[in-house]
Image 1 (cartoon, rainbow, N blue to C red):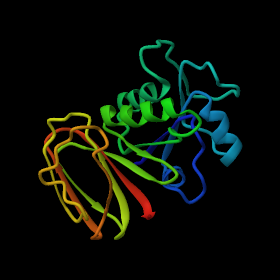
Image 2 (image 1 turned 135 degrees about the horizontal axis):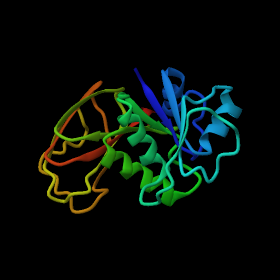
Image 3 (image 1 turned 120 degrees about the horizontal axis):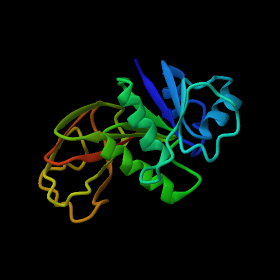
Length: 198
């Protein structure tokens, strides 16, 4: 079963990876005030609402207040889902509005080991080997927080073999030259795959 955690960034646009995740969700867990937005935009009531509840306006069942401030509502919601034993977690609505929140949420997804779907593509946490089925020409970017990362690839225009990750963004703006892209890494990375060729 697919569980979508909906954050309170920009609501996913129709037809985007984030929207498609919401449409396919067996359950939706909202971060705080995202519950109000989900109900307003789709008429769907979330299965749970998790967070410190500082922005929730409506009355919903399944509300879980976690007041601590060491983590954000996104991390609280993902941890709640895992405590429930819910798998197949995809995050949507975690980018937009504020760049600092967007960047923080993207890298929090890496730490949490969950996919993050945006309006333009999906961030995938990769640790080891991962194969992506995509369209030729799709943008593929790799973000390696650890400079000791060793990587290799198949199906990319510029192979990752021998890349020195001197900075976080040195392996961005690549392109799929095959409908099947394989990425192998020695340390956890984030791989962004665009929705369509750019």
